[in-house]
Length: 457
Ligand code: NAD
Image (cartoon, rainbow, N blue to C red):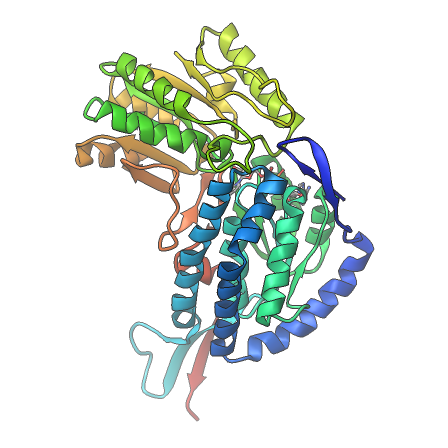
């Protein structure tokens, strides 16, 4: 399989693909290896993942360069991803043993009867993953899964195969047995074949379109299924803000990683009293973003990883917005240079039915609309099939809380956006998915309870 550098459009490497015919053998090996992996003392698994963390730190620069090469992520942002990986690993290392420990129950049945909850690993899980933050979305699954005694068949996105292979190499070097963690290299056909295997859980990160197909295939088997899908995340800027600061924060939330984040700000609603001022401040911020080769230190905006398909989808959103009365304040087209670059694009006076306000853009484009007040903002923010995150900017915390409490989203942001914490569950509602990663819920996701009823004879 060819690895294409999105900054140039050139093939930079090729990697051998995993044949679908090999999958049953790989599963059988994983099943056998998982049994002894789960029997090891938790402290042994902890030591191995701690060693993995050390290797990530030692090899950080090389890993960041690989990520930049294949995904086009600006090098500073690639380093940020690796730095951000460490506190996630630390959270899991610190808390998995408590989640794994057997628990007594609330209340007692009787003196001769003991009731206890024991947590067991799921077994062998399949993880089909996305390319936009391969370390984050990968580690949200494989770190807690391995610590709790599962084996993982991991299919990185075909757009981040080198990173997937690097993760496997580091885990194996740290001491995870080869059959316990296997990286399977390939595209959607391999992903689909993997999900037909008799695995004990499926953990998927990617688009709603793919997630829905996966849910349909997996549903009759009654196994654990988690889906971390897309979003159309709104931010509302009330009239009680420092306009310049809010504009800077939300511009970063919309354009970081060229907008290719599941929780990127994708729609902005601004109180009509500050609308004109906000637009000026926002466009001024966007014009500061430096577009260039992702290998250059100063670059903030790199190319689009999905290439031509992504560029076409963005151009269509711009055309559609212009046809329906949107004003393109800056950007609006592909950049005339090699690789897959799109100008950072701001569309004002966006209407609810425009594609830029409905479809996940996943690129450097944003629609902004004026709203007369909080109720209108709430109605507009809720007008989406997705439910990942929503943000409100205001100095009046109670006002933000009132709006966010009403919204069916997994994450509510007050004066912040595009943020993920290892201590909080990462979870989507509606078409943004089911289940949670991160936090202690994201450890429990890889365990199944067994209820023990022990009558003393
Ligand atoms: P995608 O759905 O195109 O692909 C995701 C993965 O699924 C890839 O590994 C791909 O090979 C595989 N795949 C494709 N078709 C398949 C099939 N029929 N059966 C099994 N596997 C199949 O998504 P993408 O372009 O890699 O990622 C971008 C999407 O992911 C965006 O929608 C983004 O919002 C979402 N995402 C969500 C989160 C989150 O935490 N909620 C995080 C990152 C990305």
